[in-house]
Structure formats: C-alpha cells, structure tokens
Length: 180
Image 1 (spheres, rainbow, N blue to C red):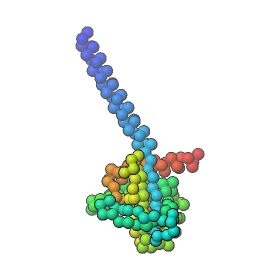
Image 2: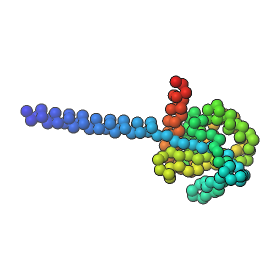
Image 3: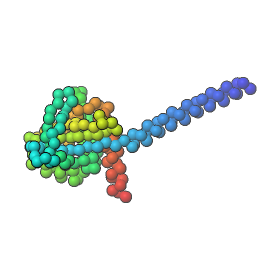
Image 4: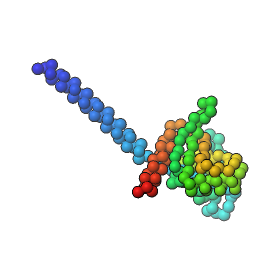
C-alpha cells in the first residue's frame, strides 16, 4: 500500500510542478503582450520662438545638446514594424523602424528638405522614468522614400528588445483596431 501512496505523491508533485511552471510562462507571455513602447521622431531645428523648440541632451556617456522642434513629426502610431538588427562585423546592433504610408510620406518630405540635419528620436519602453530618453540623432544624408529608418540607440541590447517588443505590440493593437 505504501508503494502506491509514494507513486501517487510523486505524480502529484510532478503535476503541481508542471502546473506552476505553465502558469509562470503564461503570466510572462501575457505581460510581454501588454508591454507598450512610445516613440517620438523630431526634426533638428534652429532655436525658435519660445514653445516651438527645445534643447535636448543625447548620449549619456558623452552628452551632446541638440535643438529640436517641440512637436513630433512621427509617433508610435505611425509604425508598421520594428526590429533589432546586428551591425556588421559584430560591432553592435541597430534598431530599424518601418513606418506606415503617412509616416513614409512625412519622412520623405522632411528628409528631402533637410539634408545635413538630424532626425532626433525619443523612446519610452518601461514604467520607470529612466526607461525613457533621447536615443539617437541619425544624420539625414539622402531622401528616405521607403519609410524605414535605422539607428544605433543609446541603450543596452536588452532594452532595445523591450523597446521593439513594445512598439510591435502597439502597432499590432493599432492595426487590429483599424481592420474592425
């Protein structure tokens, strides 16, 4: 009789362990599905009347000040997809953002009219204030007519993955709402 009782206890322990493991995975998955990130793409600008421009600090290691237009050109609402790319020769990584039709048109107009200036990118990917900051200022070298921008962000690779996950979650929710 004791033999059957010990088998039963082993099966019970295994069942409870699998149940807890599955529950933990489910809660992590649902938590990652709910994560949302914010993105603001601003245009570099000369200082203007009060309220139309602001000076921001980029790069935490070696700060650089840049003046930007206060109003963002594009936001996370204009994003179709985002991804983290490995840079050539293992020299790091980049974040790539693909914008929708409206975002592509805006990016094309501003990049064609402002060669030599910078797009300045702000990102928020967590609940803490430290999880949001000015990430990059890619130089405009040509007209961008494909709606895709790549930049090396001032963040860790783990933060970049969380940032991209949140942007893609937001994009998915936006497009589900438009298709209904």
